[in-house]
Image (cartoon, rainbow, N blue to C red; front, side, top):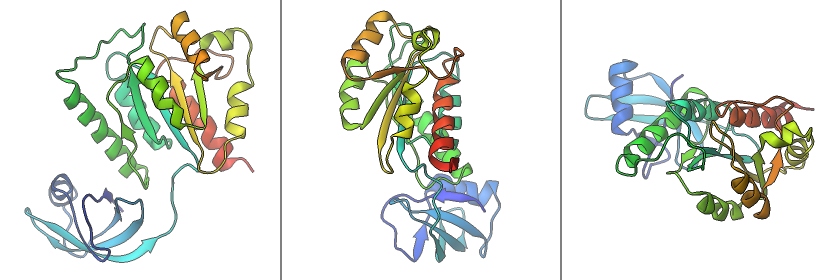
Length: 249
């Protein structure tokens, strides 16, 4: 069944869909009255709903039954990634959403090849949020990860004060043979805990950035003995955390 995230104030029995979802239901999926969909309310609750009105102007449905199961990770993991070139950040958002990320923060790193164009920035952030929404629907999430506008390193450090655990994936840690910090951080996470993991752009972190993160409470960690690409490291974080928090018994 197709999954849609509801917006605005919704009645718990009779619901309406946003304009972009009306187009998808009507024109892409070609649904009719009587079709069933998953509807996710703004508070994260999900229900099976039966469409009772389908037109180009409006799509309405009635809740048939509530769904108790949730596909969310038991702890929030937010990824902060140095700005990367091309469509790599699109890829990180799409796959990271599928893997359970709670949010994404691009940041302007010293070695980022891409420079943020603030005039065009809002449109790019909107596109990133749309990618997150579509990936959340596809992977049957109960929430859409938030995608922030790019931050500076200092803004990121300040933002990190609201998290329980602070890490940054540092290639020098891998070269030095450090293999315990990431495992210890994930294995000590409690249900409902919050972790912020920072990874660098294609060129990695500068020495100044690494020192600044360390002095601000971020723990450097290796993600295994291999050096990972900028778009691979954040996905490794989520995959490993998912295994430990959801599959390990």
